[in-house]
Image (cartoon, rainbow, N blue to C red; front, top):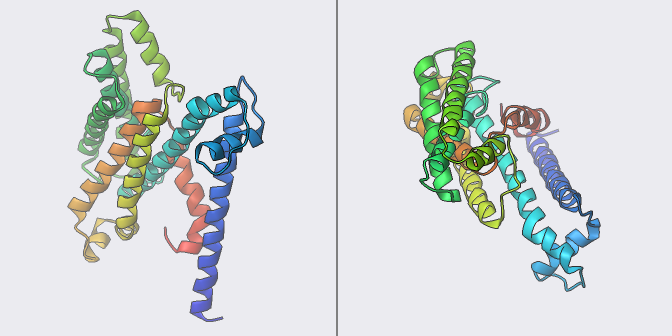
Length: 293
């Protein structure tokens, strides 16, 4: 069998897997929207979406339509975007640090983002999605700079990187706890504590518009530097030998990961595990079709 035929077959299999993944994601979102204190038939979920988008004009219970469109659908879509964003961050950090355990939560980036967002709220500097994301971004970048300082960049070794991430998490979690304790309002402190546990209950369509833009922009950056990410898995020297401007590309990719993490944390709190596991799962299924690491 020729190389061209093998490449064509591999491309077709990859396309099929991607289409299947999109279909499964759409079904999971639809099921998630239908489940809740008010159970909604699955077909009504599709009718509500198609009615709003002008594809159909099916008669539908107005309560169902309001619950679906004003509350549940936006939360489900934000959750999907957050999962995708954390997976992107996991891929970037694992490639740049050459560490299979690297992800925003383990490296303390999520903790730093939480500290930044909480500081914005408690200090009364703002409560909107943009201001929270800006504070979270500052905290996330500070946490990553702290880890990089402790590990001497990428030369500290896997064990040292993880230990530095744990130290950063503990430090920024302590700062967050102290910041909350200084809040003048007990209700505000309680709300912040619940938010830190991780919740999509407060997100609506404005939050979705922000997170989808940030995640798609981050994905575009990663696709643009896909060759560099592959090279980084073999070390900085290998990347430099391929003509990659290592310091500049590393800064761009780290900034992208910090921005995505900050946006997600500012909306849903600190979420772990997703950025660690999803990249490995995707490699298991798709590496044989793409030839990537």
